[in-house]
Length: 185
Image (cartoon, rainbow, N blue to C red):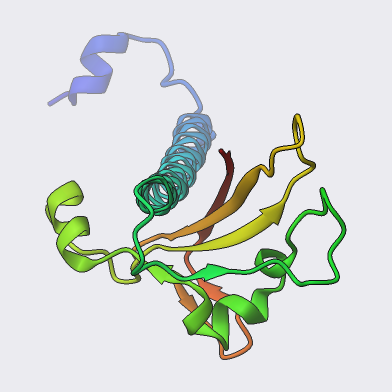
C-alpha cells in the first residue's frame, strides 16, 4: 500500500526539507511581537502625556479661579482679604517682591488668601485636594496728573489633584500653576 506522499508525487522524490518554513515563521513571529511591544509602549507614553497635560490644565484653571477671587475682592474693597503693604522704603513704581519668595507662601500662610471651599464647590462641583491661593500686594505707582494712583499686584497659585510638597516648599508630586495680574485705580 502506498502512502499519500507517494501517490501525490508519483515517481518523483520527496523534496528535501531543511526547516526553512519554521525559521521563516519564527522570524515573522519575532517581528510581530516586537511591533506589538512597541505599540504598547507608545500607547502608555501617550497616556502619560495626556495625564500630565490634564494635571497642568486643572492647576492652571484653579490658579485663574484664585486670581479672579482676589481680583473681585480688591475691586469690591472687601476687608476680609489679606493685602500686603508695600515696604515704606520702596521707590515709586517699584514692583512688589513678596510673591517671588516661596517661603512667603509656605511658612507665612497669613500672607496668602485661600479660596473658600464653598466657592470652589460652586465653581467646580467638588473641592480639590489643595485649595488654590492668592497673594495681594500693594503697589506704589507713579502719580498721574498729581493724583495718587492705587495699584495691586495679585499672584495666584493653583495645584493639581495629586499635588504634594515638602516642608521647604519643594514639589514632591503633582504640579502647580502661577498667574498674575495688576489692578490700578
